[in-house]
Length: 144
Image 1: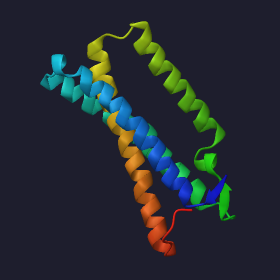
Image 2: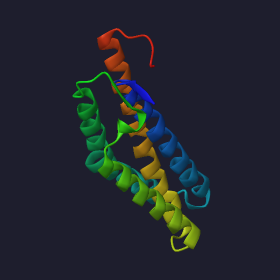
Image 3: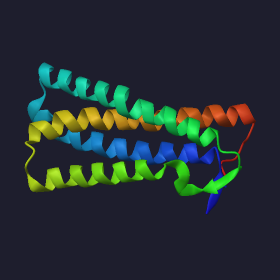
Image 4: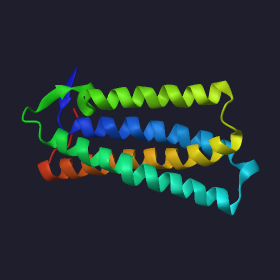
């Protein structure tokens, strides 16, 4: 199924927001027993590192890549490139494996997942911002 170029930004928004929300939810559910100032600070550090060095850059890169497409319609999965899909699969597999194996203590899940999930969610929101900006700039009313 092909969609308009700007709709790829909306798809990225929805995918990243859903992933971020779910990971943040897991972290927050684990947090009550470990709610301390130092753990909140550590979650903030995790958030800052992932947002600044990974997801913030990813949003800029993929927004520029999508905006540079010359054709108007593209397959819906082109919101990412091949490398990003591979990275996403590795991260998901690693995260699920870590939780299922029990290798990561609950405190780690609380602190790390909260920071990571918040950074992912912000990336989704930023993709949504760029989608809205593109829609406003082109005067489009439908996502189609």
